[in-house]
Image (cartoon, rainbow, N blue to C red; front, side, top):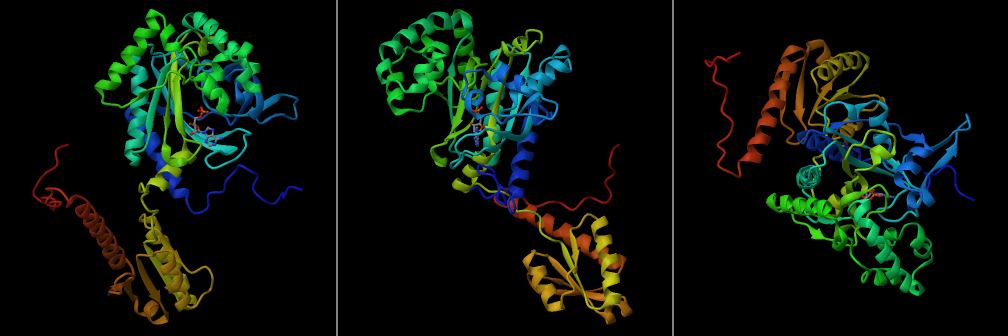
Length: 452
Ligand code: AMP
């Protein structure tokens, strides 16, 4: 019997580490913005056909992994297993590809696939991705790859390798598919069951197989890059040339086809040796025919998606830094009713100034309150007893050093506190820059007039 008061297999609670997620998602969207990609949000579920008609009937996702159910209106709906299909649906539905092109969008959110859970593979996982609608030029392929590389760089991830291939257009694939089928057919005795099924329906997907005996056979298969037509070959050559110009290192992977049916031309994957068997951090490519196939006007397009669980895992594994979550600025510890009332006022005032302020909600002794203040990393504490309230002054304590300063409750306390926090930010910045030739921040020149 399954225990129904536990999280479902393959799902995860984030209780202490939400700051890591916030950091990674913020940097993803900020990096994408530098390349002109603006965030969009699309529904978590769609008509099932949105996915079956895009991702491809023979893909693993459609065949085995989708969370599909009938809603109360009898419609077949599916939790998104990936974003591209829904984003393409939205672009067509709202006429977004009829306006100024390229239309460049990015997104972050959860996806659902009923796979066998293991390290780095979940049933609910999160992706950050981009899609670029309109450009046929190889520069657009390079732009999204450069954006992914910039995202890894800004997170401090070093052990990420780019693998790249071109799977051409339907024209170049005609002869290739005949030759590939011939080759695989002649080796059919060694193929696994799934691959045998795909021999007729979609032999290129066999190149993706993870079954060792099939991998051995696939290693000797004809390579799509030997069959590219003139246009596709020039496109791929130009992508590689521009990657070289940007000094983006890649590995040519002639067997890389990606699992989804909608790709054309450039396909790529980012992998890392540091996160175990599920080594793909992200992947993407061109899907020049998808928009038309889904009922939009012919529009070349391309994109990628990166798995955020794996990014965070890689960061943890390789010791990349997450900035620490913000700590409490001030804890106000009241003793008695009058002090509690005053503490409430002061807490509200500090919060309105933008500081994280806390006071007692548990009716604790002052000793227990100070212990709690320490636990939440409060930078300062202010103990308020009856005498302090009567006299209108109290001593503010810097928790780390134990230093205290006596201040009048009210504007003197607020001003002193703001000044102290500013000084500490300034010191932090000076510490960060002091490794170089930086001489510290100058005090603003009082006589200097700012120009409007
Ligand atoms: P895909 O389009 O299937 O290649 O997915 C893009 C990225 O999403 C992969 O490279 C992974 O980083 C991530 N991903 C895909 N499926 C899962 C999963 N079940 N659990 C965690 N991450 C996943």
